Image (cartoon, rainbow, N blue to C red):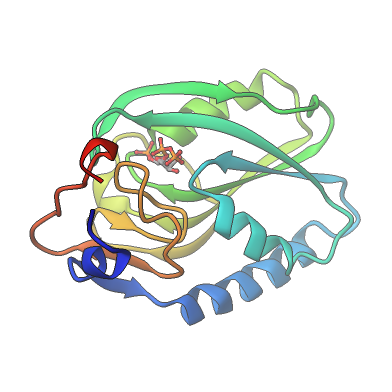
Length: 190
Ligand code: PRP
């Protein structure tokens, strides 16, 4: 099996770790102001959101609550299947609460569109979306995003929570495959 460094030779850096950290600090300050005196539950959409969720929350200076939802739409390695599935639900009801949804990326918009329809049936006081990345060139369904970290071009991005066939989520930066996409070893040939 290739080492992480060998795979990284195929990845062109797009957003550095320092840029992500600075954006988390700015978004956190903005969210602290916007949700002051509000009872907010921050809902992270698993699994891609994990690093962003952890880094952003440290900059939101409020007595907020945390919860998570599992959604999945990617059928093949790089293309959305178009069918969004709820893979795990919230741990508590959100009726009469302010809900802030955290996502790693809004790409086709299908996942967020499905989620907004689902949330509306649960009677929250408000629902807003904060996505680290927005890729508008690939939009199939338009969804209003309240907070966006970075608008990116139409590349298949990996790192900082984003995966290629479940790998590379642990890279501290965001990059993309500029040319050839490497073959991934399977456990059998590892
Ligand atoms: C990714 C990402 C978003 C969604 C965005 O999730 O985390 O939830 O795709 O794509 P869309 O706008 O085209 O719907 P994925 O289904 O790959 O699950 P993951 O978070 O576990 O990687």
